[in-house]
Image 1 (cartoon, rainbow, N blue to C red):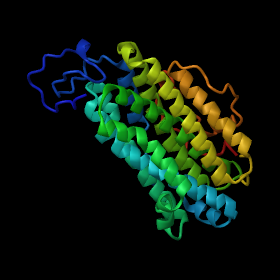
Image 2 (cartoon, helix red, strand yellow):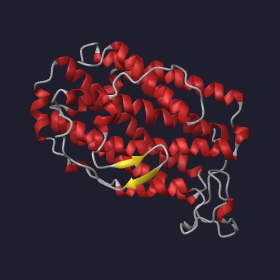
Image 3 (cartoon, helix red, strand yellow):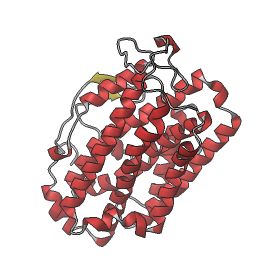
Image 4 (cartoon, rainbow, N blue to C red):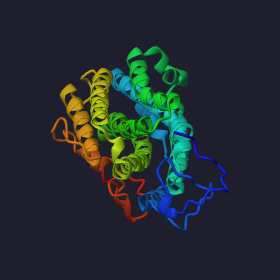
Length: 340
C-alpha cells in the first residue's frame, strides 16, 4: 500500500472514484462534492465541540487530591498515566501512521482534526497533573517504572507498529480495529476511574475535564467504526475468516489486559468498582464495539455501571453518536449540579 501523493495534478479522479485507501486524489480538498457524508458530519460535529483545557476550573481538585486515600491516589495517578500514554500515541499514530494512506479528502479532514484533539487532550492531562501533583515527573515516568503499565502499552502499540513496518491493506484494516479498541475500550475504562471518584464528590474538576475529552473520543470511536463498516462494504474481500479470527483475538486480549489493569489499579479498594464489576464492564464495552462493526458479541453481559453513561453526557447535547448525526450542536453545560 502506497502513501498518497500530496500533489497529483495528473489525477482525473472524480468524487465517485474516491476510496478510503488506494485512491488517486489530486491533493486538492474539493469539499463541495462529498462521497462519505458521514465523515463530513463528523467534521462538523468536531468543530462544534471545540473546547480548551483552561475552561475547566481545577482549583478544588488541589485540596481534594490531598484528602484522597492512598488507594484512591494510586488509582487516579495510574489511570492518568495510562491516559497520557494513549493520547500521546494517538497524536502521532493518526497523523503519521494512518492518514498518509487515506485517499478520501473528507476522511483526511477528520483524521487531522482527531490528531489535534489528541494533542489537546495531552495538554489537558498536563493541566490535571500540574494542578494536583507535587512531582509531575512521577506520573509521566510511571510507564517506565510500572511493568504492568509497560506491558499494556506495548500490547496497544503492537498493531500500530505492524502497520508502520508493513503498510498493507490488511494491516490498515487491523489498525482500524485497534483504534476502535483503543477509543472504545481502553479510554472508556480509564475515564471510569475518574468518574467514580467524582461520583463521591471528589476531583470534580478532573471529571469535568474527562467529560470534554470523552465527548471527543466518542467521535473518534464513531470515525473508526464507520471506516470499518465502509471498508467492509467496499472491500469485502479483505474481511476474510483469518482477519475475523485475528480481530476476535485482539478483542479478547484487550479485555484480558484491561481487566488485569483495572483490577490492579483499584485493588478492590475503590467504592463501586469491585473486581467483578471491572471485568464485567470491560466485557460489556467489548461486546458493544463488536456489535457496532457487524461481529457477534463474545460475552453477552449487561452494563454493571449504567450511571457512567449518564454521568459522562452534557445535559444539552443531543447527538446520535453511533450514526454520526447531530440534532443539536452544543458546547454543553459546565455544571455538575444535575449529577450530584
